[in-house]
Amino acid sequence: HAFLTGPSGTGKTLLARHFGDYVAADGGLFLSGKFDQLQRCRPFSAIADAFDEYCNVLVGSVGSEREVAVASLLRQALGHDAVHLMKMVPNLSMIMGDTQYNSDEHCVDAQERLQYLLCRFIEIIAYSTKQPVVLFLDDLQWADPASLAVITRLLLAPSSPRFLFVGSCRDDEMSENHPVWNMKETVEQTGVNTRIFELSSIDNNTVNSMISDLLCLFPRRTRRLADIIHLKTRGNPLFLSRLLVSLGENGLLRFSLSRRRWSWDEAKIRSLRTPDDVGKFLARSIENLSPVISDALCTLACFGGSIHLSVIEVLERDVGLRLTNSLESAATDGFLEKVDLGYRFSHDRVQEAAYNTLNSQDR
Image 1 (cartoon, helix red, strand yellow):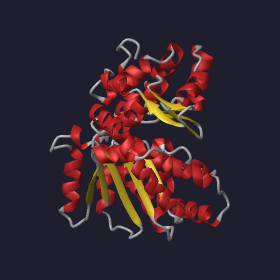
Image 2 (image 1 turned 180 degrees about the horizontal axis):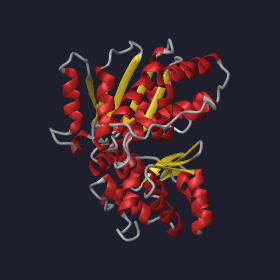
Image 3 (image 1 turned 30 degrees about the vertical axis):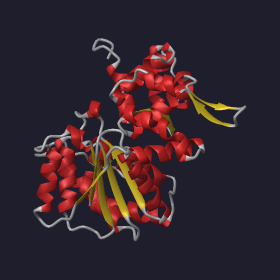
């Protein structure tokens, strides 16, 4: 099992997504969920979202051999307790069918029951397929205790050789006694193998190689520009990419038709006043957007890392907000990503920056 660590913006989530593409291309399952700083009061949120996404995919293949097999195994293993899992994983009801399930609301330890059911769910998925199953949970630094208990159970359970857990976290924002490290130590003491992959900022030469490739110029031509960019961003990939976008938008990095290559104003870029933190830089970028777009981003930030189209429709219909066009523009500018049923922030730091621009009363 693996843990991806490193400061915000170093590419942990992107690396995991690329790994997920590799798993999927080989016929495996890549389940992913994300803990949200604003939803810590919602136990099991990332795990439930990952399972709900899987169920949604499975619903798209209703009647297939795989769907029938998984549905049958889930009915046998979960029984009437499935109703409690359906409350957290809505799409599960579409797999389980129209069978009536009785709800026992007088469980001595409801959270313990949910932990057991979530573990059974992933066990069934892992054992029902001959392909690898990967569960990726992002931003473990914000994980709630109940979710960490489920992860501990999964790692301690007799594991299928086809199951792999991958977690990512900002270790620079976590103390040595953080619950995630305690969990990791606990499972390692029982003989479970875990490995940390640390991602860090990139060095001068790598920045120069990236800019050289991006601008289709020899590295010797981009060396001085790369040195300036590295100095201002400290090699943080997210900061670097957003700064390059900003330089292009402000005309400091542009394509010269007469010279048929990219050119830049080195003196102006060097003298550019840039915050020393990517969060502050993103906040300033959001404030420089048109008011309707920045307001839409701030509204979205209050709902967490993503928002469903149905929520947008309610906000527009019942609250009178006009969000759709502004969110489309924000996606074009790279602050958001369009997903199947809504939008999500392109990075946690974008959401945090948008949220922090609001005063407490507006939140």
